Length: 174
Length: 260
Image (tube, rainbow over all chains, first blue to last red; front, top):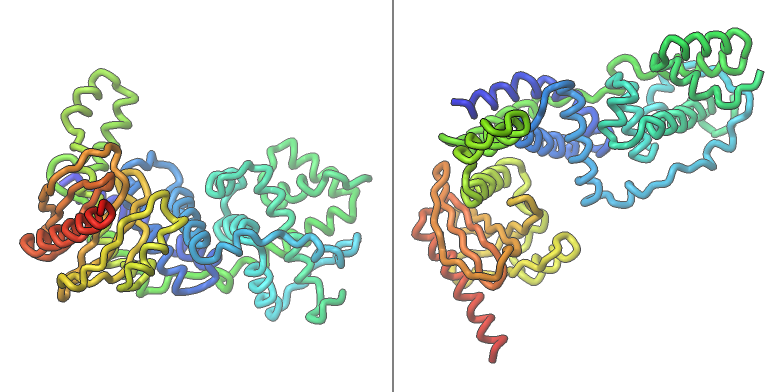
């Protein structure tokens, strides 16, 4: 039957992107159980909309749905996180002379924490760029913002992460 | 050399987002500017920090199984002989391309509004059973459930506790049907759950009970006092009718109380 093959087509085209879906949901919800629920809901929504999918980048299409499902979830459960401002003050310690980041194993954990601490709209562009390797244009499509906004969010988020990675744990400069 | 306005260029260069001219411009500048060269190094170091598995969350195997079976079950619930909503959407898309030929196809294969709704209601019921998302507010107290919808919907769904009639209220949640957010109230009868979907009707006319069977689920829908009701359950039809009856009796008692 036609409908059966739609499900089969969905399984073949969309289910392989489950890691990408879960990874984004996990970074946006910052919690294993919530990420699992949101991912499952996103897949059921994706199945519902699959008939209207015109083809193209399936992963980007799925990630758009995951991202929207995450925001619905955040609005319902963590509405204050959506209002987190990007704290420009945190940049004040950065000197004009940029230092080179030297990454040791221990810094990986600092990077993880710093990413989690970013406001959600900055976190999502970093995840889509650095962990999914998506282009500015595709990120703009997923986050529903202009390419320029993607670029400035990436720049600000990276500046923040760089600051964390070049600071010692006491917060002073190396 | 001034680095004002160069940050975007360097970032674009590091991300491989520039065209040929942009790349040349960036490389030209990087040759002469130690500050921007350091900036690029930092971009590359940060990139390196993201590589490897440690920051990537892979889907746990249990979730894979859960989603696989949820997709299968949902696909089965929404699939039915004849035209599905997917096929209708496909027909709508082709309509734009072949207006004349598509027209007759669309007319022939468009399911009725009630038919589409019945599919959505069954799919909503099935999803609520398997996604671990039966209720957003779990309470048998109608005075706790009703206010929960305040601010979440643009209408106030009537919430009745039918425990005295053998249908205790389990809770409520938000759902989506007929192209709008709707209230879903969950009632219980022994081991069976009933989803009651409620939203404001487009017109004020009351509509008597209509019964539909889809995918082994019985559905009863009616409209009354400006609200549309769809009840769905795996309960036998007889008991589901009793449920609808109990709900309507309870509502008319309220009407009389108001008029008195």
